[in-house]
Image (cartoon, each protein chain N blue to C red):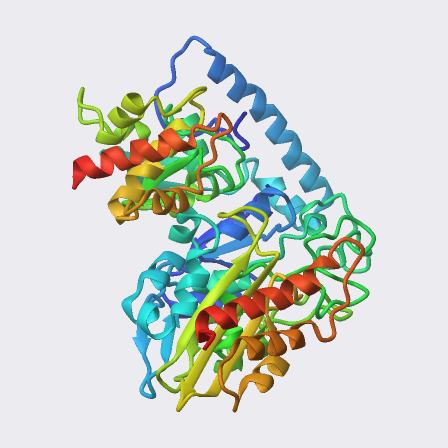
Length: 213
Length: 326
């Protein structure tokens, strides 16, 4: 799935490879589509038409945040979700876009230590925030206990929901909602798995929680 | 999503100034961002209120509870005072949404959340709430999850909040701050039934800000709890729900606070059920008889007739759970 609001051309937040990759090709293609949407809106809205005379780009803001321990300063279209910032601006594609509506949990990341849906989080609101994604859980070569538990328990098939499951599970363990299989299931219900690996996911969370305790 | 300008209010005064100029407040953003992406909502300006000092849970002088508007759902649910004084609130919150959403969404935003009616969320469908005068596609459409109480010819959408049902039952008060100062509105007056203006959902004036929800002190001991009935076990909106609080002394029910969710265009207070309970001794037959009052005035649609009976059984079950059956 493509980003709704790709990188603004005037503000490249990170170095991009000069040769077009599949990802940059998609982003560029989407940018054209995005411009068309803005054009439609301006045509239908006198208030915005005035603004459009002087300003080409939609309103954006500068945000400084820390992602997986690295300080980042980016300028984003105000509409950009944290998920799109991670995937399309910062090249952290571990967090997945499933529903893009807060219903599936595939985009789960930690913001200031709390698990949240990055698809419903506006990047512009994250000034000073500490974000941890699936890419930031391991310590060097040492996997996070829950990453290891997912391997030990064979807790995935297609793997699309897995980054969200693991980050959410890490949050769940930190919150202490792992007292029983029922409690784990209830507190992990914000993460859907269409392959149906729930039993093994629950066991993986249980394993990692035990190891932690 | 349409473009918007973004401003973060450093304090309450800045927020109110921006609100007076037509800015839209954003707290957790879980409903608003979702609906902006669907283009159901298209504010020109978002005013981020997350820096405002509205994050406290405090016990009031009279022994009630004041929950700041920016307290997150997860924080409110876990708060020791909420858990011990009003379990019904904690339970309603923890049966809502997902752990991730509860970490984002706030109490003020929760009661401001908009209906899950699929026709409201689908910009190609007729909806008087989204587009006044366009009609109501749900009336003759797929309306299994819609309201049976408080509906009008123009709108049959339910209010989706769980904790709002607990607030309605407990007769909470909403604290508001606007350009003209502070005021308080009874919770059951704060959320508006659709009537002929379903686009008006709250008794809010231009630029007004929710600062807190206050739960009044109730006589102790008070037993309370929330039951939610839904199509799946977790992470789903209610088909029916019941918030119950009972004060029993000397073997007699002295106070009964009961409201239902999933059935009304607003959280549905059940005064007829409460009246039936007060002055009586708890018994299985009392719960059953009182719960019969829950369906009074219900006007089911083609696909949600089942809700009338389900509502009565939900109320009966929860009266029995909270009050015991002896």
